[in-house]
Image (cartoon, rainbow, N blue to C red; front, side):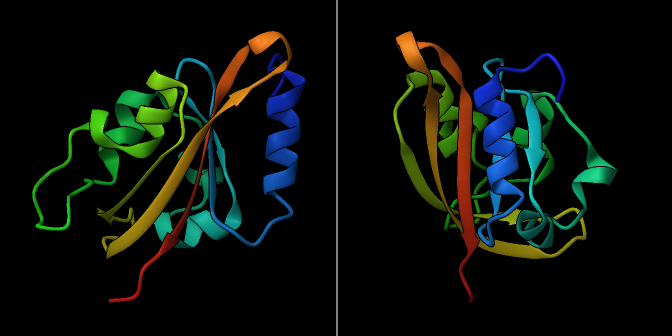
Length: 130
């Protein structure tokens, strides 16, 4: 994570030591990291996917609403947090990269540093058993 704000480096470090699934993006919305608990839900290790632009991560998991209709990337909590700089929450379905369909609850919030610097956003999520 060279050349990233110290707050993003610390957020990644914190996420590596937590048992909750966490997904971190930079100010442009590019995926910087997701932790090991997130790997189990997303269906692939971060080491295998690596960083990716928002245009890819917002569609690669094929998000659908609770009626099974495709969700627009703009409706995803992490995109809402990125664009409005406000927290957002939603329950929706994804298809993990392992092919498994999962229902998840996602809470996302912007990372705002000192002097109101926008640093990116974080999503914390968990699987909802069916």
